Image (cartoon, rainbow, N blue to C red):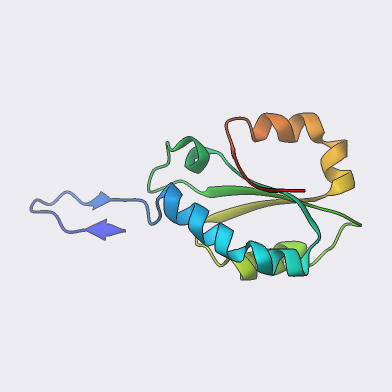
Length: 115
């Protein structure tokens, strides 16, 4: 978000704070659970570490039970409706196949939901 400054220098601030992101995701969890049988939801990356900038994306891991669903990405994006959201959506079997890689990705993360 652009804020006015007195000089010719433009200063940009992140659109959301970590607190705002956590609130928006938490408010959407019920809708997500109605769509997908959730196993795990984790905020990771710069927003979880609170090192985000105006250029940062918002990394969210979603793991669900059952077979891979081709429409999961589009539906979750519509439900969450957060600008700059980078979804990482895996079925439980995909998560298990890539567990070491995913666990490295989500180091220093914020757990939002687990079963």
